[in-house]
Structure formats: structure tokens, C-alpha cells
Amino acid sequence: MPATPFAKAISLVTLGVADVPRSTAFYEALGFVRSPQSVDTTTFFQLSGVVLSLYGRVPLAEDAKVPAEGSGFRAVTLAQNFPTVEAVDAAYAHALSIGATPVKPPEAVFWGGYSGYFADPDGHLWEIAHNPFFPLDAEGRLHID
Amino acid sequence: MPATPFAKAISLVTLGVADVPRSTAFYEALGFVRSPQSVDTTTFFQLSGVVLSLYGRVPLAEDAKVPAEGSGFRAVTLAQNFPTVEAVDAAYAHALSIGATPVKPPEAVFWGGYSGYFADPDGHLWEIAHNPFFPLDAEGRLHID
Image 1 (tube, rainbow over the protein chains, first blue to last red):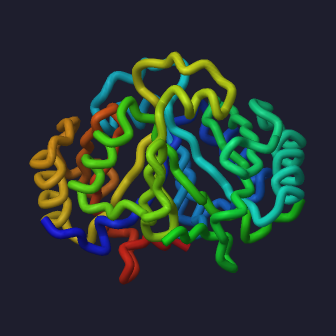
Image 2 (image 1 turned 60 degrees about the horizontal axis):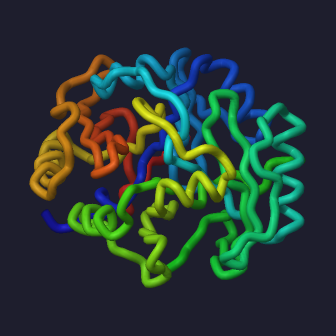
């Protein structure tokens, strides 16, 4: 099957969470705007180019028909890139101020950028980074090719 | 901190993988185009509105300064939405034909859509779905608000 435009997008990133209202409040405090398309069991945030969805961890596993048990490192991270080092520091401080779990304070990293990590209420990892080599457009989107 | 455009995007989704070249070949076979910005240790795919990144599972944990151990359900899924049920079936069949692990064959689901799941070589879950209530734009991006 040739690649189609529809096969080139991640439409949604869904995070399985223990408590949808708690996580919704967390992401709203972070600055995301809850979509009116949200329902009691599922919160949607329309971001720039992708929708972030919050859904119960157990029903998410049930939806995929896989066991819900799991622990430790998930090997998935979500990153927000910022135009400056100062914006990274401000975003990290803001996240901690609204209850994010500190994971790694922002610091200069080997590839020439500046990056920190925090975790959401369920331990989902977010990287907050400045990459001087990867420009952002006016909507904050990353375009690397 | 007020929400800024830069705080409204997921810039990158990074999947920690056991073998970056193997996973790169998998996603290329799926139809994604490897960005020339990729390096030996990290593959980037510019998708519509977000960059998918493949990085070693252990260095990804080290980057966040968290233990790399983990198992079972990751409570994160990535979804591609398609404009028709037939396109979902075709995408699922294509994924299996290039070596994806079948997880849930596409079927009608309770919320009125049609959805299946496959896993990549490291068990990362992808949902392939048609949602008749959520339109896609010409680039295949989902806009729900």
C-alpha cells in the first residue's frame, strides 16, 4: 500500500490514566484546553496537529484487548520543544507549580540542546526541551524536513 | 504562566526501542519517510504536525534519568484515523504484511467507530481507526474543535 496522507499522521496520542477528571485538571492547569468533544470517560485536547486523549488505563487496555498489568518504564516520552532555554525553565517551573512530579531538572545535554523531564499524575513522562537545531513554526510545531 | 503556542504542541513522540535500525525499517515499510535529520542513534519521521522519534530504550531512560526496567501494558497508545472503514482494513492488512504483530483485528466498537490495534517490534501499540464523528483534513490530521 503506498503511503497516503492519512497514513502520515498520528491522529491521537492516548494516555491511560487512573482518574480521568484528576488528569484532566492537571493538563488544564498545564495550559491545555479541554475540547467540547470530550465526554465523561474521555478527555480530548486539540493540540497543534495532534489530539491528546485521556482515557482510563483499564478500559484502554480493554479497548486493545491486552492485559492491563504493567509497571516501570514505559519507553514512551512526549516532548514539547520551546524556542529558548528560558522558556524551558519557565515551562518546567510552571509544571512543578501545578503538581507535576519533577523527574529531571532542565540541563544542557550532550546533543547541544537543553532538556528536562516531568511526570504527570500517572507517571507519563514529558520532556521539555530547547533544540537550537530544530526550528518551531508560529504555532509551535516542529518541522525538521 | 499563560498558555503559549509553544505549550500547545506535542513536538515529538519518542518510542524507546531495542534496535533502532530494525524499528526504522519497520516504520519505513509502514509508509513513513525517514527524515534526513536522523542520525545513527535516533530516527526521526516528520508526520503531519508531530515528529515520531525512535531512540534506544535504555538511552531514553538514561536521558530522563529514570530506571529502564519496565514491563507489561504501557498505558500509551498512538492512533491513526482513516476516512473510511475500508481504509482501516487496508491499513491493518498492510501493517501485518510488513511484520506488525496483530493485537486486535478491526471491528465495530461501542462508540460508533471501527478500530483495530497492532504492535510494532517493541510492543508499542498503534490503533487504526475510523471515527465517523471526527473529520480529517486534507493532510489526514484530526481537528475536533
